[in-house]
Every structure is written in C-alpha cells, then in structure tokens.
Amino acid sequence: MKRVYLDWNATTPPLGAVVEAMAFAAREAWGNPSSVHATGRTARACVEDSREAVARLAGCDPRDVVFTSGGTEANNLALRSAFAEAGTANVSTLVTSRLEHPSITRVAEELDRAGRARMRWVAVRSDGVIDLEDLERALSEGNVRLVAVQAVNAETGVVQPVASIIAAARRAGARVHVDAVQAFGRTEDVATEADTRSLAGHKLRGPKSIGALLTRPGITISPVLLGGSQERGVRPGTTDPVAAAGLGAAARHALASPARWRALGPLREALEIGLLRLAPGARVNGAGAPRMPHVTNVAFPGWRGPELVAALDLEGLAVSAGSACSAGTAEPSAVLVAMGDPEAAASSVRFSLGEDTMAGDIETALAIAGRALGRFS
Image (tube, rainbow, N blue to C red):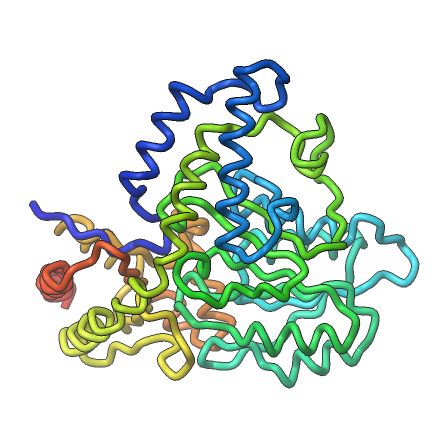
C-alpha cells in the first residue's frame, strides 16, 4: 500500500541533513556543554552553532535564543514569566483568544485560577480571525500585561493580523507573545517585533524535544524550573547537543523554505476542489480568511471527524481531526467552536501538505477519500 502523509502540521518528516547532523553530533559532540574540558567544549560549540542558525532564521541576536524542549515549553515560559511577579492586588490582564494552542489557553486558565492574571478572552470572527475591534476594547480596559496570539492557526491555517495586534498592544503599553510555531520555515513573516516568540524544531523538519523561546532585547524571562545556570538560568538542565545539531540543520534549511511552501498553493486548491466534489455539503473552514497555502480544514456534515480520520488511515492516508496535542480526546475542536460552528467542530478533518508533497499524492489522497466517504454514505 502506498501511504500518503498529509499531516505536516502535526509533525514534519526530518530532513536527511538533520539526521546526518545528529548522527555526527552523537559520535563527536556528545559531551556535556557545560563542562570546561575539550569534550565539553566540542559539545558547547555544537550548541552555539545551532543557536546562531536559529537566530538567523528568527532575525534576532543569538543571545536572545533560549533553547527549550519545544513550543509548549516556550509558550509556558513566556506566559508564566510575564506574570511571575504578579501580586494579589491590582492583578494585570492577560489578553488572548480561544483560537490558541492548549499550551496558551490552559496556562491562561491556570494563571486566572491562581489569581496571577485576570483573563480577557477576545472575540473570534466566523472566518477564524481575531476580532480586532474587540481586541482594541480589551486593551482600552486598561492594565493589560500581555497579549498572546498565534501567527498561524495549526488547525485551519488561518493567518492572524499579527502586525496590527502588536501595534495595538504597543499603543496600550502591553507586552506581546507570538506563538510562531506554525510560521517558522513556512513564511518570512515571523513577527520580529514581538516581545517573545516560540519555535518548535519538529515543525520545520528538525527533531522533536527541542525548540526555542526568542526574546526581544531588554525582555527579562523568569524561569519556570530552578536548578543550574544553563540557558542563562532561564531553562536549567543539560542542553542536548545532538538535538541542537538537528535543530541547527533544520533552521538553515528553513531559511529558504517559505518559497517551497508557497508553491503548495495549487496542490492545496486541487485537494479542496476534489474533496468538495466528493462530499456535497462539505465546506472549508476559514475559507474567507488569509490562510497558509498548505493547509485545508474541511467539515464533512454527517460524519464524525475522528471516524473519518480512522477510515482514511486504513486506506493509507494520514490526516488529523484537529490539533495533535488534543488527539485522542472526545472533545470537539476548540478552534472551530470559537469560530461559532459546533457542527464543523465535530465533523472536520485537517489536511496539511509539506515540501515533499507531490501532485500524485493529491491524486492518491482523493482516490482514498472517495473510497472512505463512499463507505460511510
């Protein structure tokens, strides 16, 4: 069976150059980067080389790159740090929306429960874009400490107006955190004006278990964990030079990647047209908003998204019913619920293409979808 992988938003297949870089580091740079002897210095050089590669991709200084275990930890660091010194009196506000990744929304809810932050959930338009007018209202209410927004929605591919959001927050004197996990390596617009940004290696063809929090000069980050002085004390623990080597290779590849991802637009369009023909009544979520060219999220009324995903998988097509971090739960997509479409929240499937996707893969995917949908009808 020829399998087709259309779940690149969940994770990307590692590049050959990434695997080679990690294998080399495992042989030659396996030491503890904090050790002062030659073995440690070799490992340290590997880590710092990766830091410089990530900085070039992010458009920042290497000193402003803090390695983490991935995007989830980077998001946690950014939000928890912003409210680390919050007191019980005159608690400041965290502004975000229900479109965000769980590593934003659940931390926000926890900060609210603990009395560390006051929550202000911004309204969402039906096309999956944050309501900028409601954002302005939230900022005008005063005492906003942080605005958290994703650059690209992982489920729908909808691109948020990050530049406008940052400008509005600046006028109100608020800090901005941008979850750019789905943006790095796929678009040149990576929110360089944000105060903090998150990145995950496995979303840009690097290894899992490593990512980064990127900070604007002058922004102080308080650690979530306490221990050693690694990563300037922000993220204590021994940095893995092998994972760092893989991330560095992925970051160097990602510098030229946006053009390759833009070229996927015609394939995504062909996939959407074919799916809508196969399933009368189906609709594309977020179709009216600016979207990344490699993602489509389609509602199939009358079907349950997870069941259709399983049927497609049996035929050899890998897709998702929502965010990979929410897979296996019975809950409908929080993103599509926020967009005001509960039917779509339970019946949608995400198809995400990648650099290796070819026209033949789309043809095979449509043939598989035709068989699966035919059995369910």
